[in-house]
Image 1 (spheres, rainbow, N blue to C red):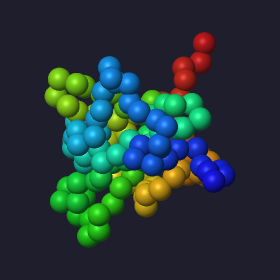
Image 2 (image 1 turned 30 degrees about the vertical axis):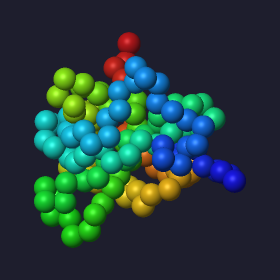
Image 3 (image 1 turned 120 degrees about the vertical axis):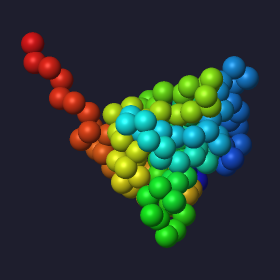
Image 4 (image 1 turned 180 degrees about the vertical axis):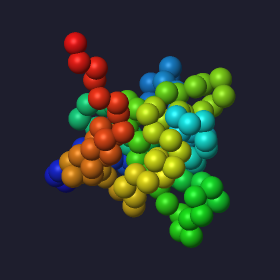
Length: 132
């Protein structure tokens, strides 16, 4: 039972397949908006009810962030620019160190609480809309 789960790893989504024309960014390098490398896309998380990819599971570069443990974070696909030519994923609006500071992802499904904490993290870093 999915319960409060809003996204699950692609490997666990039995009825979901990436469309043939869709990019599969697994193993692509992930860069922050500052051009610094943050890590590598490990897995895709999909919303099985909407049949859409929602998040990239990013395996942070341990050596770049002085991490003693393997650490993963989630980045909403809507905040990523996929560049097929270089096989790179660029996180919009966050530096590589800000990507590394996102809430840790321990695997499995994403519930609404984790989804909200990610939304909050990205909203805090977006510029305020200009007033008219």
